Amino acid sequence: MAPWSLPLCSLLKHTDCLQKANIFCNVVQGLHHHYHPVRSRLWKRNFRAVSQGVGQLLSHEPRAGKSAASVCSSSLDGQNTTERLWSVYDETKRQTGDLISVITANSVDPDTIFANNEMSLRDIEIYGFDYDYTLAFYSSHLHTLIFNIARDILVTNHRYPEGLRKYEYIPSFAVRGLHYDVQKALLMKIDAFHYIQLGTVYRGLHPVPDEEVIAMYEGCHVPLEIMSDFYGKSSHGHTMKQFMDIFSLPEMTLLSCVNDFFMRHNIDYEPVHLYKDVKEAIRDVHVKGIMYRAVEADIEKYICYGEQSHAVLKKLSAQGKKMFLITNSPFDFVDRGMNFIVGKDWRDLFDVVIVQADKPSFFNDRRKPFRRVTDKGVLLWDRIHRLEKGQIYKQGNLYEFLRLTGWRGSKVLYFGDHIYSDLADLTLKHGWRTGAIIPELRKEIKIMNTPEYVHMMTWLQSLTGLIEQMQVHRDPTSRAVVEEWIKEREAMKPHTKDIFNAQFGSLFRTYHNPTYFSRRLSRFADIYMASISCLLNYDFQHTFFPRRTPLQHEASYWPEHGSAGLGASSPSPQDQSRV
Image (cartoon, rainbow, N blue to C red; front, side, top):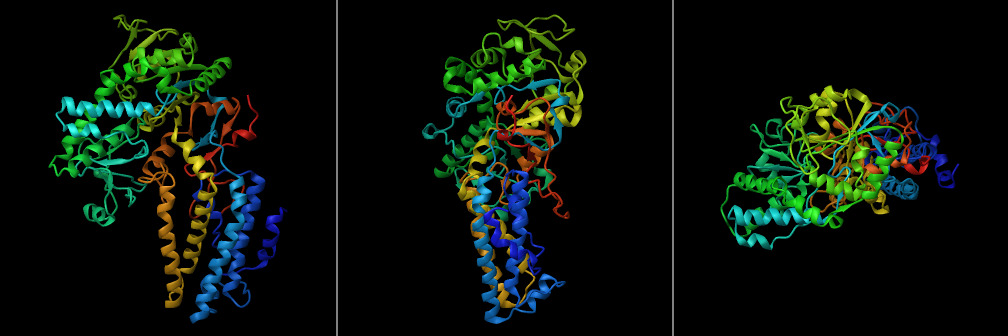
């Protein structure tokens, strides 16, 4: 047994008031960590020892067969009660500190692929890709470009005040997955149960006080009828818009900046008009080709990670896998980017290339036929009877794609960054396997691997366990101590948010609960990863297993499996044989 665990062994023989707490086991559920099986079993076993052992401080002698409440209540009174409760607190904190180095040593590799649903690469014969933020990754300069162009469109075309030109893009302001209340002009984060995370509601660039939020929504819950629709849009009576696209970060920031300008200058405005104008300005940046031309003119400034995408495509091609590309971007833009990423022969790697597909309509609308595009962008009028390698096709629909290719069901794996537009319909209606590309994952994992985060979350979970166990004591002395613990816990919660993003926190968590984004990710993506390059770490016989994390009513029968938040990781890349 490892030296660090020896002092805890003697605690295993005691059964007392924290026996069922399993305080330390909950730590894992608060972290997106994956542990080596041997260490994990050892760690969890001794975590239980701590939760059992410190309980002896609450009684004069161990008494088997008694509940936590009966043991503790029989021995606690007055000043003695306070001293003993704080002894439990101090011992738990000490034991938590002893385990920090062990937990930190089992950090998560950002290049790991995480699984929500069991999937084997042995079964995958065809690989499909989106283009933007899947094969092509963009530098931060692109969001600044989109923001600046859309801001100027508002001033020039929509006659917004010239003073708006003073606002610059704020890269650290927003995170993906936020909701925007169109009628109230509020940007906020909502959890998987439709509850607003207090402290993350912003009007303009400033937070809205919790009391005001609760008054406006008569609590923190957002009713289903005003939530965004299936694709995150505010339509058909829905007043909330969810921003799921990475390209939407400049849009959220611009909305907030314009709101801020109007409030600062006491200008009366209609929030619905503002939302629609900003939405139209952002759309013009894309639809009118302004962004595409700017990127094509300085490709090296805006595109990065090209060599990794090239390596993935070459690896798949060498294994004889079929590949296709379905993107909403126009051919000239894709061709320029793929020439930079792969080379002029990039089309030889793909069996089918479809541009300007108009996803998610592409997956549902049977009416749009495919149309062939020449290398010079000329649209041809001939009927398409088969999809040929080396050719470029525009629009079309998935039903026709399935008929012409025969690529159906779970032998197809499609990767995209937009959970709704790229993945939802494919997994719900067509049975394809899906992989979500979440670039933000790499940064968040690196933060979660830091000693600061590990220490904070370990103690927060331990403290939560103490509160859960000791809340049964209703005498004033015990209640006063537990109330102190509750205040400490509440004071810690904002720090768990701020460490990721000062305004909105983690993409995946609202304090304890998963975010609405996390809920959608776990439903629509079989696997998820920081970039397509993570595939380079696994061979084509690999099976991705989600961790069987116990449900709330289940016992921990699977100690070798750590939690991974939404799903779980396969063994980390450093444990894989590199291919």
